[in-house]
Length: 246
Image (cartoon, rainbow, N blue to C red; front, side, top):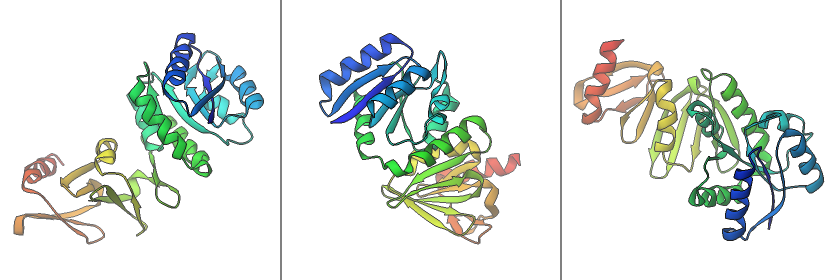
């Protein structure tokens, strides 16, 4: 049983979550609830939870106000939020899970399953990335969960991503390579607004690292690290249009 606390300043949201959990997720033990930062801190101190379902914006502060007041974080977190799009992208960048209000049962089930498998030692690192991304939307760090640890990568230092079935390789400007067990599509959506373009079904590249584009042999891009990346026929015209606007 996972000892769980719901912290949300909207009573209707707490009631709905409690009902959904009690009726469908026997592995979750609801040990308490709170309606804000102050009561949330008291509940955490008294009830020793393993999981928080945590609203971001509350009447007496926000989730980060609460988390900063804790000496240690030894529980998993699922954010429950009605935040606008940029905040949701910040959460995704930080490799943390979230539920968008109004919560639906299928998404709740997926989030709870992920929470059971999270690595607790990585949580503070993820939170640091999340807070940085919320405060500085133009200077993003991407949290990558590998088989061994979580890495925080500055987006502008990522040269390219390469897909290998359900795995994605990240090639970074410091000549390091990281592999994560997630398909590249999950990263494409949040990286494309930072100058990344998918030029091939297996390749997502950072435009700022392009050195040249060779139109011979079907077309390929040469990056500043001298890597040659093929350009698919479907993406060739799109790439040429981008070059034309530069």
